[in-house]
Image 1 (tube, rainbow, N blue to C red):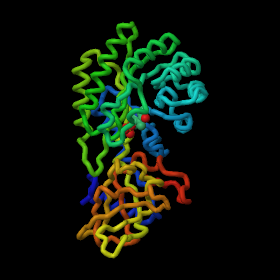
Image 2 (tube, rainbow, N blue to C red; image 1 turned 90 degrees about the vertical axis):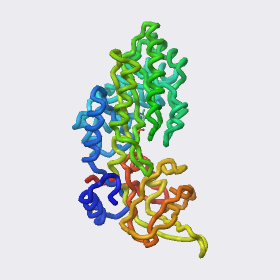
Image 3 (tube, rainbow, N blue to C red; image 1 turned 30 degrees about the horizontal axis):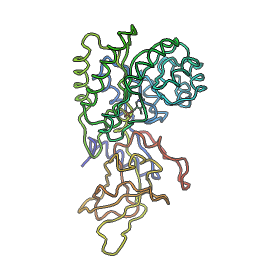
Image 4 (tube, protein in one colour; image 1 turned 45 degrees about the horizontal axis):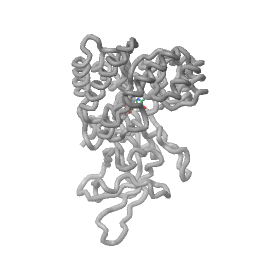
Length: 384
Ligand SMILES: *Cc1c(COP(=O)(O)O)cnc(C)c1O
């Protein structure tokens, strides 16, 4: 079996490259990132694609996307500096985090950023003062649909429709340019109707806001596009076809400019996290389950396994009869257990020193890795 649609030749290459390196590390296929970016372009021909930098801020990934003409969504002035250092001009960058210090708003404005997202009165006032005249996306709360996603961004972001319309008026009064509405249906959102629900709501809001003579020009549909994990999802083409149909249905000829901010959907399937089995144990002689401790865990890459939210395929070159395992990381912290309730199966022949390949780990792994919890270094990344 060559998981995640790797051809035998591609998989050979990954194993051969890995054999020469000390684990754990993330191996990113730039070719897969390129192909996925092109797929987003093909399937959403009219959208501007703002890569969500936080998903994988590796320099090679950013450089590749820069050269492919991508736009970028940043979460902080630190990501902003990283993008500017790579020669990306500020007109290709949006500051999408609604939570930011007033002085960071000013810093971003001084460095040329003119597109922001907001969801609160305090932030709108900061923007008006520190980034005068800028374009603003107003983020709509999506609590009803994000709860269906595997990694909900839920209650933390966005505001209710009533408040959103008030913020739009306030922003206009304060000299900002209300530019559009943004939403995020929840990360790893497999349910396509979530986008329909969001688009319907946005359509209503455009009409309401239009009656106040403010004509929004754009809609930012955020990220949420799923990657294939243990649970498979439809290909991007299916999501795109449905979403484009909803847009047509709800907006027809008056479809606003579309912005997308894929993170996981763009880079998730491009990564393989390579780890080694550090120890294998049973809690009693008759225990049927083996505890497999690997050199990667919650703190050095597999953060999204918290609550077993994201179930990465775990692959080994060992074959033969399999049995239940509990998978845990290497640190002295009992939170550092990846999978205990969901029954992963690994070969009984698995031994200390064998490698475990975690698939679809291109997003939210290296960027989530602690700096030196228990002295373990941050996750290294190599590119293939
Ligand atoms: C994290 C984030 C994204 C990316 O989400 P994915 O589910 O990884 O595609 C997009 N937009 C904003 C504002 C985000 O915070």
